[in-house]
Length: 532
Image (cartoon, rainbow, N blue to C red; front, side):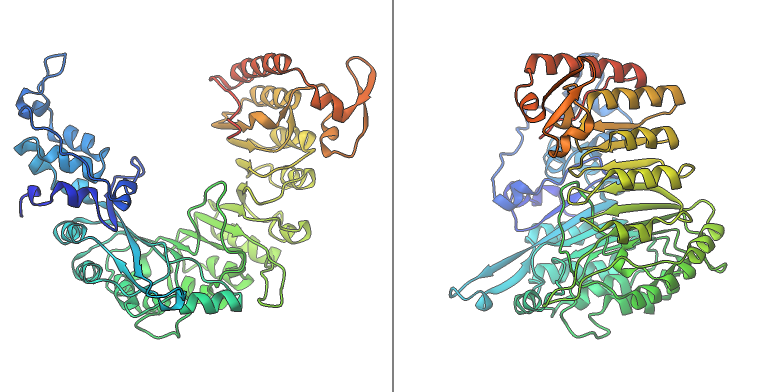
């Protein structure tokens, strides 16, 4: 193997794309400097590693190799490169197989615009030659690969093509995540523009990662272009169906995004049809973890997952989304799954954990289709753009007493105090996140209920700015009440004025008292989360 010193400082610090090798999720990808082209100075070689002695007298290089490699796992690729310049030991450890098991490769779209017409841009997905050299040297060690292209799909430059060709022949991946461009929209106008800006000439190189997979256990397809006419070379779904060695795939995430609290996605994206989803799942008999979006669900799919010739399902994650029909596109409705199908799945997979993620504001009558008593619901996460009300919380408390362990609502909501208290008393929760308006007295009661029930609350999160510290009733927060009664002083007051003139010192004292009370109940220091 060539010396690591052949990878110059400027090449490591710059480039149109980046490669980040990590173990698990310990590290952050250090791509910003690479994309901005910042030049970094090489670390001075002032002393040999043998002279690096800590205050305790321990020589760094005398530590076991497994310890040094573990330390290097916490460093970015750039930092590991600089460390490898210090001495022969770290030069050799730079190539340690354990440091190259997990790789994230991000391709960027580079283009020239000869005119103001966006359809005349000359675009290509590019990779810096140094990164391509690194992949060529170490790709045979990759076990977990994430391939990402943020912009519209374009022909790859020579480095990208060489990289993907090498991965097709040398890689023995156990897990693969592909995010190729943004989700394409079902809206005809948007779809036509996206098609004009995309070019799928080199898609077969990406499809080849699935065609040639032999050891793949986990596969996540976050996004994939749908504009091109389907054919075997560019159709990743056909590649999945054609590869018999994928029968042992245990985890399959289909158009399921890496969810963040404030993440937004296209409301009406092009998704695999329920029929195609059923065909894919029927082919993968050993799935124990499945994640998809609600428009891809069907009664037949739930029945397929319950068949005896399959591996029992351990986890089913569903991103629930809703969109009304429009002139330009047909919307997405929440599917209706029969109680019989859910019961069959429940019997065939007794350890099944169902997790719902509510993406946007789903009408209660449609969301109710997914909240049947037969569902083994263990977690529900209402994202920032979703909707939560007392009716929903009460349904959860009544139907999922034995199964619900996590309730997370990150959207704005009102008047859920009594329902939240009922939920905590009914279910053995380990995670409670509520970012709507809530009275400080309600938070105190909830913490007391957790302590009395002996629950181990791993996450107890309320937003500081949404905790109401006046003595008004929770119902006042809905904005419809003009005059309210203070039960403590037995006086009437104008609700809006009282909230406006709330004393900051008094609020601070009550929040401090709340923090102390909750901390005592939970057994660890607690403070409401920052409002930022």
